[in-house]
Image (tube, rainbow, N blue to C red; front, side):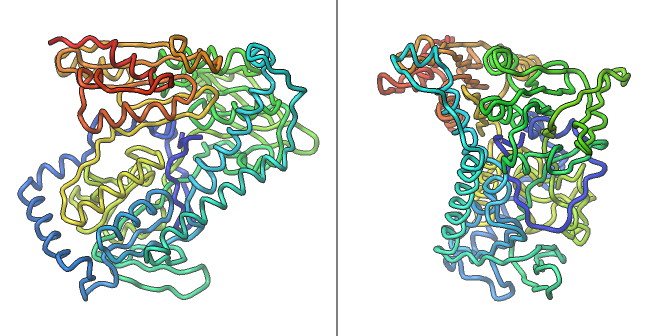
Amino acid sequence: MHSISFSTAIIAGPNHHMSDFSPPSLQFCGLRRATLRFSRASRSETRRGSLSSKLHFKKLSASLSHNGSTAKAFDYDLVIIGAGVGGHGAALHAVEKGLKTAIIEGDVIGGTCVNRGCVPSKALLAVSGRMRELQNEHHLKALGLQVSAAGYDRQGVADHANNLALKIRNNLTNSMKAIGVDILTGVGTILGPQKVKYGKVGASDNVITAKNIIIATGSVPFVPKGIEVDGKTVITSDHALKLEVVPDWVAIVGSGYIGLEFSDVYTALGSEVTFIEALDQLMPGFDPEISKLAQRVLINPRKIDYHTGVFATKITPAKNGKPVTIELIDAKTKEPKDTLEVDAALIATGRAPFTEGLGLENINVATERGFIPVDEHMRVINAEGNLVPHFYCIGDANGKMMLAHAASAQGISVVEQVSGKDHVLNHLSIPAACFTHPEISMVGLTEPQAKEKAEKQGFEISIAKTSFRANTKALAENEGEGLAKLIYRPDNGEILGVHIFGMHAADLIHEASNAIALGTRVQDMKYAVHAHPTLSEVLDELFKSAKHKT
């Protein structure tokens, strides 16, 4: 979680409070949440029947026959609350479809991903990657290189991350302005069906109407009870990305995407790291085989130790010359286990939806642990289990898949629907990545999930694997450490999941994710041609090694 492959945390609303939030539901940015099952939204959709859905889309098609001219009864065809990656993607697609569009943002354009997540974290990880290359004498010697001792300027690194976020934020803003999206500054609140207000704190509100409304308010870091965040020695990812200090010893609570990526950054810059994980093994959100390999490469050789099967029940910031103290209890017995004293603690326990104060009560919507319930079309469901007409929710706020690009894909799917096309997004085709060195990426089901599905539905699964050690480009780079894994059905060739650990894994995964999205089978992937010598041949060999029963 969120990727630091952060999810689309699109901050555009009132004060947020998550006192009753349950951390297990957010483990690892909710990557697998609701990908294996539909929520009660599906049952509601079934009750309504396919006929009403078809009529709904026919009416929408007729209403948009005037090339996006707004119905006189509304100020806009579409209003989006939240201008993060999800809202931005929806806005651009809406204008392309001829819809008069406005987007409301109460903070800054780009949301968490651009300002406090995916984007600045990649800048820090770029630095950590370079540092690792320069510090690896054995690797350099194998390439015939000699480099003097590497160093870094902390403020220069921090400036690089901040400048990148600023550049991308400006790009997103300009891209919307250029095509005529109205950017409305202020806190967005739902007043009722097809009506919202927005305004800055202390100023008068503006009321607007829209034919359709998308909620895209994102998420914020989740901090469990008993943890006191001071922003200096006990921090969340929001604070850590500023890199105001590089502590000698930092404890990271949570070993998901966010925790793993920060461990990569901190250890490259000289810190010692201690992981605190509630479950019995590190990286439980990944395929177990990939987790085992990643631990051998990313954890064991580095200055990292860990405590698994424990909760951090109380964390106290450093005060009066005393270090940060962390009280640990056994996750099962709840008995006291240990007390740690460290220089800093990073809370990487996932993210919580930013939905309180949106005015959801005005459309009779009750959240579930803060998440807004939706069906597979992202249509909002009210407290009685019925669809709320003209209201949609995308991204972290609905919790289906807490990733920035998932939010954008959901937003595009919604725009397709309000433009008259019945579109359903296949969340199992959405890839995820962890930008450590080497990288981890995945799409679809893990092996345990695939086995469970196969058992329930009565089919067999097969596994194919290929090593980066057999790839010419990887060996030329002296980066042979890596594995690609394919989970598939041998009877019909359906691709169930692909997992990659190795150099540029985040870039390689898209061939597999697109294959799943398009329904391409392994027997067809065998005929794809890849340039030689490239890392893409790792996937080429992977699909060629699959045994399809003809």
